[in-house]
Length: 312
Image 1 (cartoon, rainbow, N blue to C red):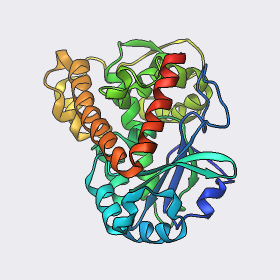
Image 2: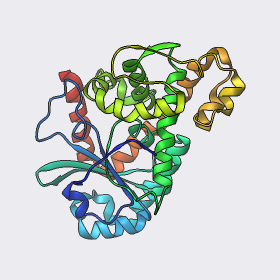
Image 3: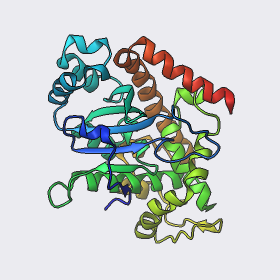
Image 4: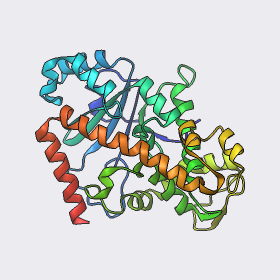
């Protein structure tokens, strides 16, 4: 099973939205980043997985029309079409105020989320779930185990692929840096607008949460014990593993396996594949955001990102 933390008190915003199958909070408002300055304008980021995007947006546009840009005037079908066929298949409503908290929530079809968790098709949402998040709602495994199984695979895959990019000896901190970096590799925002040292800030601010998330995964998958300190760790199973063994490893997503050309270039091949996946999805999702949020909201969001970069 997955090892993400689960909240007993979801934010009030969820109660004002149509039903979703799965929801989680992520980002600096949900988990602190080292050196980050928090204020009333720190936005809480949410992701909602829904069974039927058209039905969700139809009901939500009726209940919360102020959450949407002018695109909603074209109807729920247009909104759902943009979500399903654009970028990382996520539709965001930013700058929503709920109980004094600024919120940005993204909507994704359940099947699209599960595909990304299992196949790393975009690494957009699966990458966020490589890091500690706060799960707000999830079905009981006895009723629907698909989320639990996909989340667990995603964590095994993240730790496995991260170790492919590490030397034979490394520290627990280096492991988490590598894991947290996977979904930022190739992200065009990291070139300037995203916060400098973002990955290191995430790990420094959430080292204990990373340990809680990955200690059971490393123990069960690689028989590696994480002690929560800077002791040296050793990987024997993956390091210098024959190419055919890597190709058959069930914890490496197929798209990563297909990108590995030779045993001598595994780390570089993995990085190349990650750059391609993340590069494409980050640019496409940014373009979708311009349409879904509208020009004014998009400009405000971009300005806030640039402000963070300049101040750090």
